[in-house]
Figure 1 (cartoon, rainbow, N blue to C red):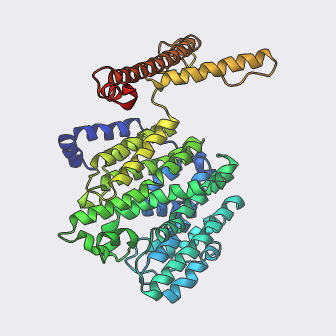
Figure 2: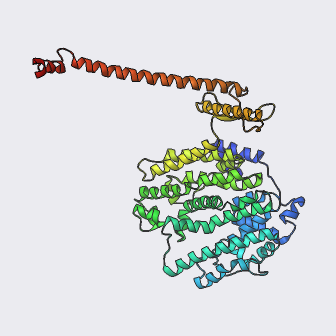
Figure 3: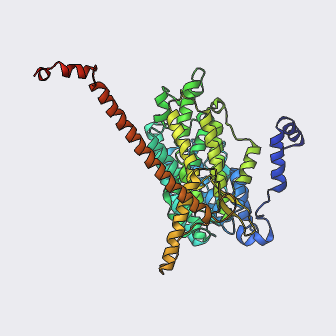
Length: 514
């Protein structure tokens, strides 16, 4: 940003100006890949690898920033992983390449990626990543330098992805079907182009030893992470993709609102129905949020967590920006730089990321309209995010500083704390009994009350109060039964007394005469 832009920002959005200044002053770069001490793992001392880092900056500046901060050789490995898949995606997206030429290239791309000297110059002149394929022999050189356990993962994911891309490209070229028909087909496409990326990243994280070995086996959660990011991009890029005749929204969604062509959604007079379709697309993306939060919670390495968390928080912020925003149908919209900087600074731990998701889910729900056909489902989807946060990070348990370090403390004003105290006390009693009997201690309490004291004393009081409350409830119920019974007896006596209908009928009967 130039000086004039900074001045305009200061005058029009002073809070955003402050956020960007804070980011510039306090956000430290975790790693400098150009530093001499980083050359053994970043490869910056080689001309070929410097060229690869340059291509990464050209293809995705925002993604490049988080890749460069990964620890050790992970940065270089994922850089190469990204460039390989970017090259594959460029060929698949290029509509100027005939299908009979495109098919063999796509289906053998994993072989070309390890073939020294291979490059491709047949992309159209307007393809933005054309130069990457023109110099693909540089990519091949660096891929072959990777450790075997990394190289195997990259080639395997490339092989799976190229198969799916080739199938979809062939279908579009031969059947004339330019749309994805169903949500299931949409999910499968997103799996091929993004879900497999999540799988590959998880396997690379595990292979590096920086994450648990079983992380690479979490295929469903890895797939959901990829689908959340991909679907967000597909929703946001509606106008750009439509203008270039690329259609990724499933017809099952937008066709249900009376549209015959996707381009009709940005035409005059279709604003309301277009927003309903937009709402349904965002609803479909929101169903991946809980899995994404589960995945992030499993990560242990800080650089890996930042690498995964920052795009995820950007995605939920983008979904909130697009929701009920008619500008999305007219141009490509993005979250503001200050908001992006704020998300980068906050996305440092699972709890904070979950809080970001909860806050944006609340904003989405606040903007939802009851007249929206997806209103109830949207409310449920947003509620699930809220529920996930409360289940994993209960709001009545807070971390407070103490001389021994941070410790959990419960909020005594919250009714849930009484249940928690009772359970904690019961666990402590059981642990004490087992210890006395030689069975060993099992999980106790360890959570303090609001006054900072040990939870033993307030828990006893809570248990006693619970017994008293039960006794009061039983006595009250017994009193109600007595009152109802007495009322019934009184009514019967009143109706059967002298002068009552029942009494008069009895005195005039045949038995009375006898």
